[in-house]
Length: 68
Image (tube, rainbow, N blue to C red):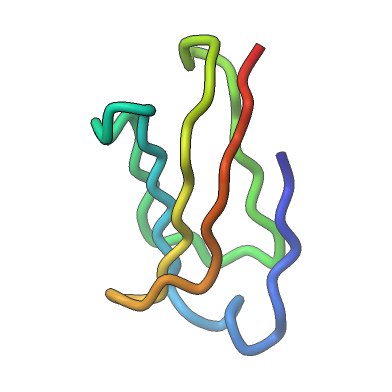
């Protein structure tokens, strides 16, 4: 999955967090500063997970991701 970030957001240090259906954090990527964010699905268990993209403690994007 690929997210394109706005000019405002890509100048900041972003964090991407992935959570399982049970709320367990399964991945966290820090200090993302590129103009696009790619979520690598390899090494993730099949099923549904949820993502949050944050600047500091502010969530700027969140949603559901289906891994098959």
